Image (tube, rainbow, N blue to C red; front, side):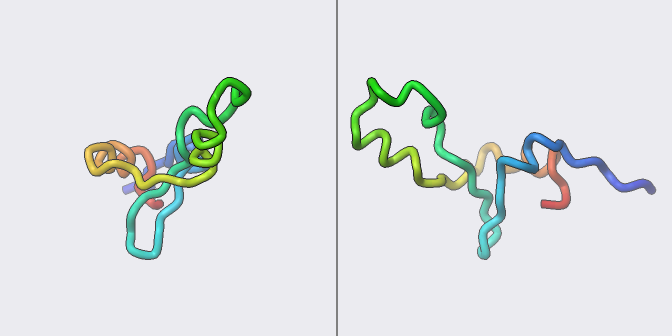
Length: 65
């Protein structure tokens, strides 16, 4: 059986942690930062763990991650 292809966009946006969780960049932190509070801007720098309800869909997109 041939290998499955990974979704290139998803592959670039996610990483797997040492414990096997998926990590992504925080949302709403790409642009238009001037009207957001300094606290919001600081919190955008952190990465977030992908929610458990999304993991099944992402594993289908990126089977080898």
